[in-house]
Length: 265
Length: 158
Image (cartoon, rainbow over all chains, first blue to last red; front, side, top):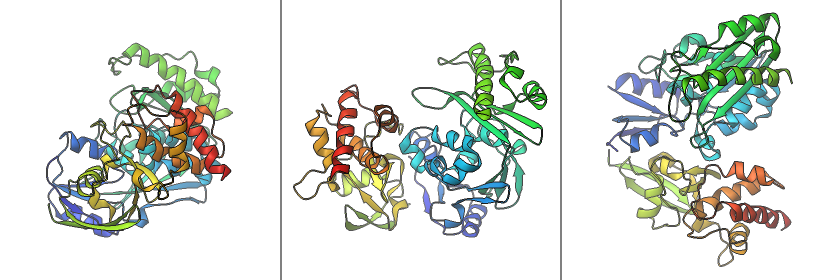
């Protein structure tokens, strides 16, 4: 691993000031993605800004018809939170399926969102639930936040502070995991609210995408039958030793159906 | 880069050090404190042989920098026994042949102790799910699951 300067700010303001001032600062959240890449020299930050001492970034609470989760909330905390289980159980289920129990004890929603791994779960969860990402500078809709492969709308020195989820009428999550890494081969978050359905898919392509044909059918009838005959084209889908494009395209259909069934249960 | 002071509690005792920021917690424990019960079993943060408790919560010490733990409380496998009396979970692993080479065992026990805190009577399925972050190449997990089940029962029966 390359040498780095270590910073441990105790407030969001202090963290942003450091990140804006120094040339190339890297925020450190749970470290479950960052530290392994540093150990393998796949990433070489020279300045690390540890966010773990910032109490303001933690917390799970309801705010009217919204569920708010602080950026430094651990996956384990989300998975077992009574507030989350009551408000949007699909999010607790998503968090509980990330990686393994030890990774979940450290990994955070803010880190996952800011990293935007193409086979991670939270980006699909946020888009599938029309979440708003609050940063140190602004509020960004999930649809506008996630770009391709590890790229997001965040600018230098901008920190994710909390995620705000409007409570859906129904939401369901279904994931087919790689048994070794537990990343998604394909995973789908489905929700409906005010007659508008969302179907967000991760793992199949280089970025999370929505399936508009399925959404249109679900707008009319939020039921598995409405979408079970919709085939997605495998064009542009990931192919590797775990699953080829055709397999993934079939999984999108299978998991979307399961997610709808789970949402309606 | 090299002059980061950190002070934390390890197994109940305060330790202070001046460290290169790159020093992983597992290396701090093994090489600076000679607590070699915590093991390095992979380089991809998958195997869990490095599992310790940080502020009571199991974590992979290979993926945390020691300098992050100012004022934290770390417990390693060396810290779970009560003097010469094995922790009930350690005893359960011994009684149920829960180890062969023993390399994964400290990590298994640290996670298992946390399982006992959160479950009254975990099923085999739940135990296997909770051990997904701890890999074993010897046992096929069969006796590890037995040991955890027995250990949880022993802990709750006392």
